[in-house]
Amino acid sequence: MGSGMEFFIALLGPVLGVMFVALLVASFIALYTLAAVYAERKVSAFIQDRVGPLETGPRGLLQTVADILKLLLKEDIVPRMADKPLWVVAPFVVFSAVFVGYAVMPFGPELVAANLNVGVLFITAFAAFEVAGLLLAGWGSNNKYALYGAVRSVAQVISYEIPAGLAVLSVVLLAGTLNLQEIVLQQGIGASGPRHLFGLPFLPDVSALGGLFTWNVLAYPHLLIAFAIYFIASLAEVNRAPFDIPEAESELVAGYHTEYGGIKFAFFYLAEYGGMLLVGLIGAVLFLGGWHSPLPNLGPVRLADWTTGPIWGIFWLLLKGFAAVFVHMWARWTLPRLRVDQLMYLCWKVLTPFAVAMVVVSAFWASWR
Amino acid sequence: MDYYRIAFYLFGALTVLAAVVVVWSRNLIHAGMGLLLTLFGVAGLYALAAADFLAVVQILVYVGGIVILLLFGIMLTQRIAGRAPRTGVVNRTVGALIATGLFVLFVMVIFSARFAELPWIAQGRMIDRESAPPVGSTVERLGQLLVGPYLLLFEVAALVLTVALIGAAYLARRSRQEGARPRRMIS
Image (cartoon, rainbow over all chains, first blue to last red):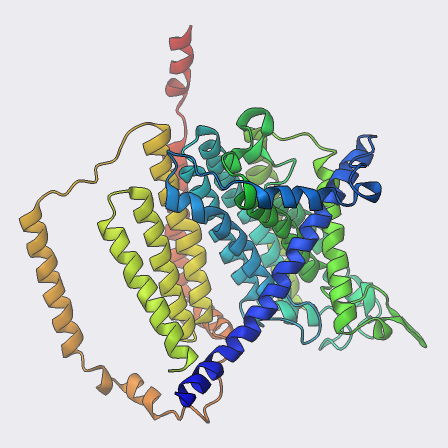
């Protein structure tokens, strides 16, 4: 009896530890989503010369808290003609697919939950589960708006995975690894081998300076174009405006989540905002130095050394991620929605050829280095 | 029981149970989702066998590509075009005979294979699990093999896929006469 208990404790101990960390990240995503929804409203308001939420709490700060309380208290309604099992699991599939991506994200030196050798591919692969979840939601709702929204969304996400994947590939070719943590380590001080400014051998070696100069976008200037391609494609992959055709409110009510309410709707929201932050973080890791500080070492003023560490790592990475989320919001409230044919034109005839060109440039660069 | 074994049996059970759903469900979407879970379970088994790259590519290609397109196709035909696909049971006797025959054949092959005597299995059994170095990444090794000894096969596969892509684009292309027809019908 006693040994049985010990056996279970030995078995469950590490599992509980992992679950605790996962819960920590999940609560972070929930809190961040609350803040991001508030920020989105304020940003949209300022862009459109309005004031945004104002009544609930000081400067409307408690507005999203009130909203989430409302969602939690709502009755859980299942449409009678819905395909119930599929309809119920869909929001959780969508959220899990996004959440899993955070497992391989390096937040600082030694601070990565799963230091996978195939981290880049892992995130790309699990984006597929999000697509499956969207299809489930659209199909399970038994609603034509939801189904059209899901079908549009899937067509869009699958198409834009190609330029995004090629842009990522142009980084991977130069990095020579699929491990996200190694890609980050190459972009800071202590990277093996010299890193010349703009990657040109006649310019000075900046690997001792660190900071901004060793980031991929400055070390290999053509990656700036790859970053732009990745950023545009990632907007489409998280179904954000100007690529919000799947939930175009003027045509489809709300797209794939038309029938959802209460906590299930909240999960779609968590997935959307979690996804925005995740693609921002991936962009930061691949192009903008990950958790490395942007401040370089200047002679005795060792700014890069002073601002590097686990806490600083989390700070810098999240700052870069939040900056990307802010640009997402900025784009949403500035640009009009694309038509379906413009969407496909942009993907296949503009982004993909340029992304292929970036891969070719990276390949030559990597072989002549 | 260690974690490895628990994970192995969990993924194994997921693979088999989801496969049962694929075969038995009359609802094509449910069957498609079952297929998705089966392929995910197989990816888990690959990961447990230290084939990290293969596991992720399995998800990327099968879950992200093939099953999604399959579900997409079912949805477009069934609910949008309003045509229900056939899911009835036909040819019971012949089907049962072929299935039983194949099952017996596979079982016989598996039991006559003598896996324990195969050189690479025997070699693997010689390795001491405690002192052996951890299995590293398979990515570098796979990459070197693909652009080294298997370069020709790799390029042939790439060519086949390109031809398939061009063929699909040609079939999906709207010819001039076809494109004009709907307009004439409306006017």
